[in-house]
Image 1 (cartoon, rainbow, N blue to C red):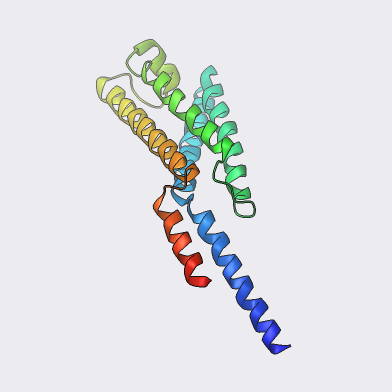
Image 2 (cartoon, helix red, strand yellow):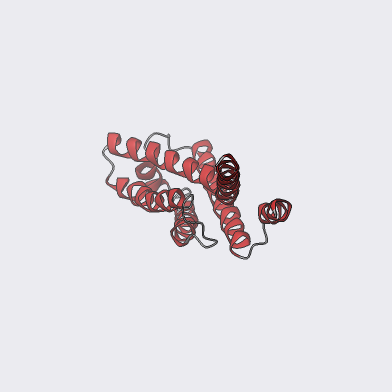
Length: 167
């Protein structure tokens, strides 16, 4: 019984390690999702407090992000190389950042979208920089998701090497 118990325990450790390694392929995606989530929460709060009717934009982005977060939580138990909701989420974030880049230069929409900032050149430059950062992050994560989908990421090779060492 001791030998069977020890063998079962070792097998469980290996399975848990493999599950964690596959889950960690998405570590950067999870951190970036959290960044977008909290950024949109703060933006939503500032729009609601200021009475702007455009609070719907960050609210919609938060709903989309929640689908992605739920999918990423499920990835721990059910590994997949193609998290569809996360991909759609980052496409939506990319498109919204590109679309919001235009009002960053128009003064009439600027105060409605960013009521916590003054309508000056420095504020517009700050918002444009944040939106460009959002565009770059979304593009980077979409590229990362494509690499994971095709098993071309560095972490996948580490997993395969670990599997070979365990067998």
